[in-house]
Image 1 (cartoon, helix red, strand yellow):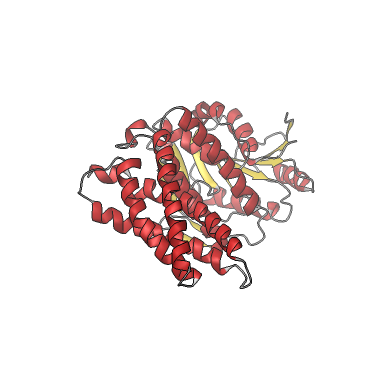
Image 2 (spheres, helix red, strand yellow):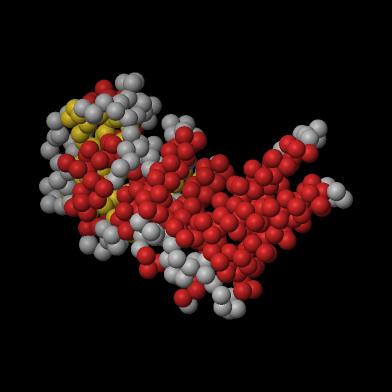
Length: 396
């Protein structure tokens, strides 16, 4: 169980009647903490029209982060520091937000990767009552983002899975720049299980499930090359959280968001088993075709032809049996978009084959394409459900 130490909060940074609490979760951030908090405090003091309280939430740092946080709380009006004995960004946010008396609660990453000019647009719709939650998004066309291809790929793939598997409508679950009306978030927090990186996603999914309005703000965002975030571990934690929420969704017999968005073809509880059966038949057909083509063609060419033939048949089968679309209208469009999903699968399997050494045996080659096809199948389901056969597109 967490123990919490609170450095006594100073007087608020202004006499304005409405208050925003900004939480900055930190773990071993001695390198950037002081400069970031001073820059944030200066920006709020100069440009922010509401009263503010900055709370440094130190979750189990082992360096001198806590000592720096205490010094900042003594130095800067409107800044306080809280220490938790256990790690977890979600745990830190839950602790501060649950006890907050502010009108709006928010948080941002300590590296201040998001341009602070976006903070007022984030808060304004909450103060006006227009929205219940607000998030920064790096995936909007209006956003200006500087980051490496690895982070870009992971972020886009994760958010695609959220939209396809759980019907999420928000675009960027993990941007460290969010806010909510305090009474709203305090009502949601008891139902949020995660204490780590999936906390944001779970909170947003829960908000959508209850019909709350989420406002999105395109942000300017520059990646911190010395970020303490372990991308692989964070991605795995997020996928475990996603699987947990998906299990709950399936046990309820429908989407996490609303049953009305499922449309023809039923919910995931029916779609996934049918998709698996269609996929198994398609995989067997693929292996037969691949083995036959391989007798006369190089592996990459054999892979292309086998995937192309099975992709057309797979799209037709999923259209009819998995997603319940029987009308002829839209058939050509579905096949063309299905070929785009095929292209993604082709890229995955081709990359897997290209990674094999020239001396690899035929058995190793076959095992490799089977594994790559499993990955491609998951991506294909996400694209078919979230894009090609999405019910909102069929309604029009």
